[in-house]
Image 1 (spheres, rainbow, N blue to C red):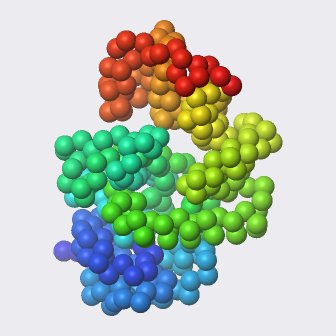
Image 2: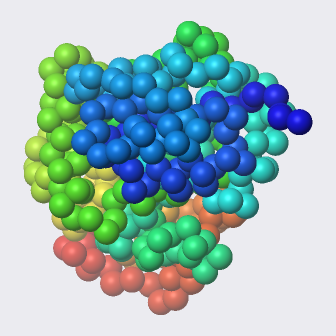
Length: 349
């Protein structure tokens, strides 16, 4: 007997024929219907998706990811929507528990951690793949975590905004829906294994971000995203100026904690420890729930020889995030010999 419809999987694709079998066949434990919006494929993505049981519609690409996402949402008939991309997956063992969690949930936006796999161990927040997660990593050595609303109630109030780095969360909050975090990771392989594709993605995102800023130059989220884009384009001076202007104009605004945190990492990279310490402290005062910034605070105190301060911050990290796998490794480092007080120029500002 067929189960009652619960979850609509909403996907936008272009030239993803190679990835669609894993996406659609690999998540049948989760979805009751799959909606695929094709934004202009030159391969057989559309025919393949239909053959795998999805409803497929064409969409004329207009340089707006939100428009494409919303076209998919308009076609969804289940009470809940799950949004995935073709280069993402949820581990098979996590699917049945996630479905049960959704079925038992009151209407809310459900945030899932996104594990962005990469071999670049120099990235802030990078941590190695644990042996039990190796099967999901597709050969990558580590990952960086971000968080997004991936599951939410269907309906006219659920709509994405933003040409790029689009988000549905503001619409859900405006509709009076709470936002809750779950621990089920979305495994994202899009940033590893294909340098040419990654370079094309970065160039596309840069172009769309500039359009986004032209349309709404005061938008804090867009300004922060542009600063992060500039760092990816190896233009740290411009990124720093944009971030400094953002926190100067809105010291406690909606993206100020992220901006302060990124300013701290820039300062740390330049050996300006006192400035990094101030930035991380400001970020934590605004958002004490961000583990990355706490970990950065521990590191900068340790690197400048402030062993008591590092240990105190580590104690707070351990209390707030007891299950974070990075805490034990950092604890071992902090409990070792103090770092050199002359770290990259000492406490320069």
